[in-house]
Length: 583
Image (cartoon, rainbow, N blue to C red):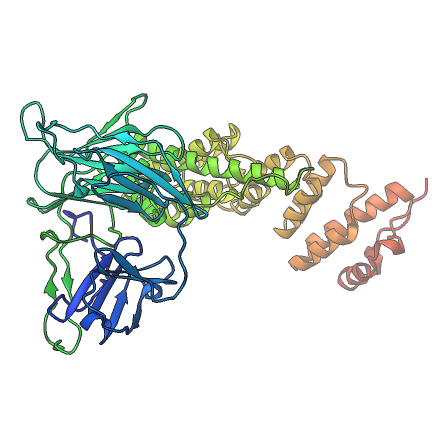
């Protein structure tokens, strides 16, 4: 996508036969379906939606001009209107009146997501009466008044249906009023005023979106963003109501991004008139009758902290966020720190919710609570995500100072610790490998000495493997394993696995465990090295232990060392075996 655009249409347009004398076209806002009705339905009705599940084709009898046609949710019942006072349901069922209201109505709006209808009443049309439908019942909600910029005299219908829209934003129902002003010094242009409409209680004005221009507009909601399209300038504005000033009764918002046009789009021709070599036709995005149906892609914000706040609330945000993190690493360390802190705050909240749920499930009242398992949204960027997609590749960068690379890695670890998130050992390993690759051994020593890198067995093993490159790493590893307190046996196992048999013997003596350790384990390890003198030394060491403990250098049958005794005799002769000594 070109950098000057941050909105684009889906690559899969809904294509249908254009309106003509024999073909009528209708759009159902609730189901997002386009109906193409040919010859009153006699020669076919084709219904298409954003996906294949909502597409269907059928025929029906031509009983006159179709004024409106719609499906119920899920395409279960078809309703056809041919006259101003009747609606026909092709699925023959009986209807009964459940409830009626006597009210003068100018026009109405319906929100299918929340099953709320909004009726315009009074002469000026600005007193709105909402009704909610649930489980076959209709509930009258609190009516409210839209503030008009100018009150006409004499009174006349001023608030029109096209100036009002209903939408669910961040899980809350809002009535959006497109408020037109003449552009003057005191009034810079039109506004979109949002009224929060709760199920219970009064409707209140909560947000004002400043458009800073005048003219014709259209609104749509994409991923909880309010997108305002301006016809004459052919540009769109994006607003996010969560990016707001704190402690304000009515929040005033400027566009998140500067006005930009939708990315140009060309529709490929299809149908019998299409020619294979014919180029796609440009789509007129801002003509007088467009509707943006499909989700756009959003990016572009210079303030990385604000950008992260913006992206963390989007539905499909993970890969975009990880891409932004990769780009942010080119910036200053404070910017990187801000980005990490915002990510880890969301990460922490998810971990806490998961722990709370697990504790409730395993507690005495298991299954009795109404708490649901927390949903892991794409906004949860964990350590594995950062390691795989950002940090690992970042350490390989040749165009960035190795000291800055280390600083970024440590900044991420600092942010995790600040949010009380246990740092995974592979992040520490990445730090150590980066330090070693750049010969920053003094820094490695300091990080370990001052416990900047937390102790762990995998980390100790990594240090052991670095002994040939950095000899002090051996002792640093042993010190770390000792600090883990439960690791004496494991220290021996680690050293033996690295074929450091004498080092393992020295360690086990230093902790007073030499008298109880398995001789066979050490002899196995010594023999596997192929070093005959090492095997001799280890064998004689355990003979001396046996002599000291039992007065006899021989191994007991329970120690299962017969194979190693035979091997010793084969290499050095029976005369080399230690003889019992008497006091």
